[in-house]
Length: 191
Image (cartoon, rainbow, N blue to C red; front, side):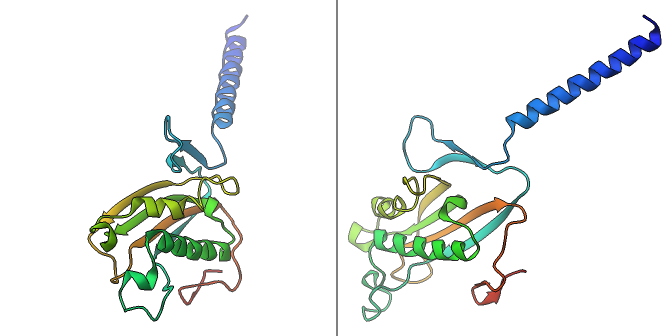
């Protein structure tokens, strides 16, 4: 075999191996969001979430509960309900906002939950109450996706009576459809 033939064969082998390695790497990567479960746990959050390139990111501002008893004393927890009730209120609002953007709760990849101390719990956060509301939206048969999440007690929220504030990050494949006339917070969305 001549030197030129060997060089040509070597180049072809290098190109073949490079293509095989690229194909293997592509096959191992995913074009879908990957949710990594917590090891040895059935807790309804992901230990991590991997978002592949090409996804749009939607940041959802902190949301607070709606009043359930507007005639209750202003700034009281009675006005907004207990932690479970407030969590459900906030997540329903978030669900509606996401649906206007043609997203669902299953598209949330990261969530931060801020809990104020509940006066009826000696000023401690009601984590169990938050989870009772949260588990109606995540890790269910209807919506099995679970975000990575942090939950923490804070000294206070923006208004007395608020026990829950939640912010989130959602994603969708790039080039996702946007409603033509959707508004967020009274401002027109980008078209």
